[in-house]
Image (cartoon, rainbow, N blue to C red; front, side, top):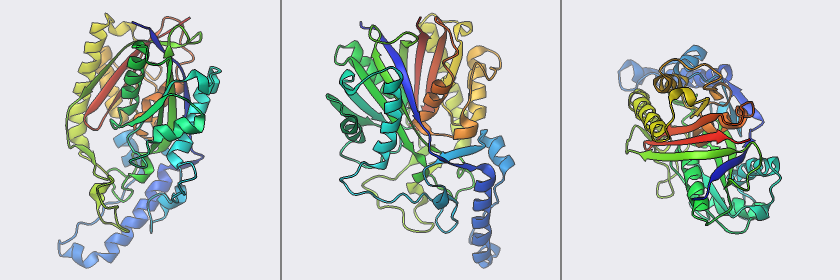
Length: 373
């Protein structure tokens, strides 16, 4: 079977960032106004009062300190509390494709690849801008790539599922190189009026160039194995879709936005992912000590700490399990790829690492890689 490698990655980071202090000030102003406007109903027990948020609460619950967004003003405006991203005419590039192209171009330029070197594009993301035409086909067109493209959505595991799909196409001889693009506009799907989740997400785009190993440049990451797992759960859900009406102005239809049962997710996902990683390592004949670095999904610092501890049999330090969660927040499928993009260049030939995702579905993916000479 043809060997496959990750040749390069790309990252697009929005220019605007919201610190926890700014986010808390906005939410608390909204909550105070809501409580004042509904004071009588709250006193009669008909409406639940909104509890203020705090920087301490956010950081303790998640490890997040800030997040990048495409529209800061709209998110912080207590009369709106969602990004103001004007709809573009059909003859202009969609916003999702635009940021995806930025990340893709960085990945291609990093190893001197042109459009003619790529045979397929996958847009693997959890928050799609539209049903069709596929965002992947639009990205393919904007980059001038021949071949084929399609969208895929497995929530926060979309990137690792995309890597697996790309690996299979290449191993089967169907493609020489596949570009996996992960544009995540999470701010448009987050309920910024919900204290328990208003701090979770940020916007970003990443890209992964997957190629035949014999075409990959020196220092590429040979893919040792990829495993995927899904198990249905309603504990993380987003009901918005093209069959649903859009959420109305104001406070209606919160179920059309991101919702989760955070404690249940934590309790169920941590052991599931840790066991999956251990089983995959065993199948590859790898002992925990052979794992140089873990690039885990950037959803929650406490989850990552426990998963790493279960895998290694001890606490992992920042070098073994780096985080970007503090600055980027949860960027869904792109999180583990941001961590990999920022923290892989210091490793040496022969070092082995793990790119791992987990999220709604439930879904999880493990990608074990080894740096080449």
